[in-house]
Image (cartoon, rainbow, N blue to C red; front, side, top):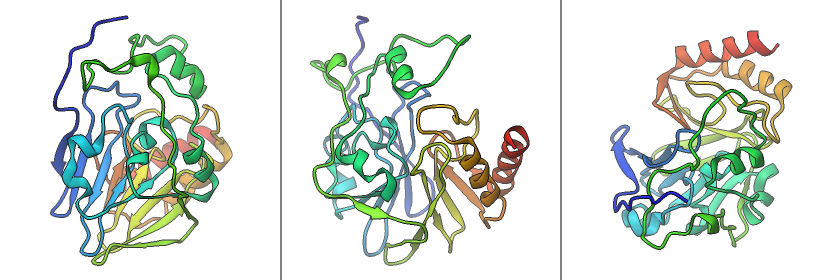
Length: 255
């Protein structure tokens, strides 16, 4: 087992706008280095996705919990749901709610995790581990797993609204990458929080739980969304025109 350095700064925060902070985990491999989006509302905060769960959000980012935020999970893959157990209330699409209570096995060993996810990377080279540092000196790589959410989750459905006081997010069911993939649209700001439904780079549509025809239908839907900016689950934000380009390219490739 490689000896990994210890870092005291596991999470990095940067403003996306006046009320939204992007949180990243820079010591993770790109495959599992997901964005967390902290939206500070007038009545309540929301955190979209919760990272890998290697380090405690409460310990490293205590201010995140000052206003009892609602965690919204775009889908229940390990890199989006790892910290969900730390929140008092968690929302997820109804079709993946049981996965919060009974999470799938997970590993920080790359080959093992790729097998668990059903990702075929024949011809590609990956490091042995999905991280290049650890948050504490006694961290046990082999003991890692996604912890269950103990309180019953808020089951979200197509069109449900999440009111933050000064803005509202609309939940849209967007299956394809996973059965319960959910995107969240701030209709006033025209900002889409897209999870792993769409981002820059190769979209994963042949892993366990993926559904290519459903993904094509989701991409057709994205073509009609009035969006100024996409804040995805991985990588940097991009504009609505780029979103439609990615969606159209996917449709041509798969349909």
